[in-house]
Length: 137
Image (cartoon, rainbow, N blue to C red; front, top):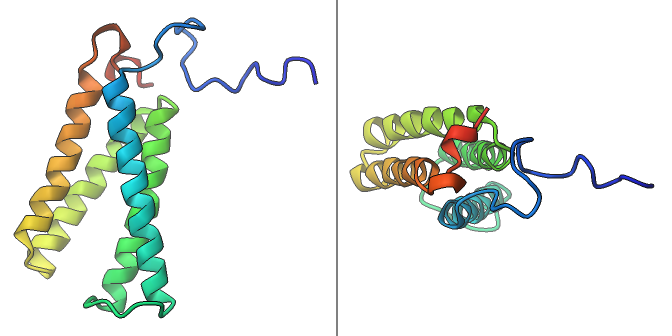
């Protein structure tokens, strides 16, 4: 059991122990995105199971549940310093924008989704030495 914690760090190899691994605002924003998508996934799954009666079709609920779960995976990938997490968030935001505008005709929901990913981009790029963007691999 000696050395069990050696490979459990979320930081890349160039970050020393005790050094700030990421900008605090990026951590807060990613955490908020994680919680929001977790709630969205659970609400969609609960609606699919019949625990609520939403104004959405079954296909919209499935899309929402799968999308929220995918975004959780993408956010966790960013926490693990993987660039494909950002690329996945961006790709899903484009797809969700299209669905919200063309199918649901909900401009406010579409713009809010893109704005959330835009804020995520900004907090990944900012932060000085603790910025996440240059260290994504």
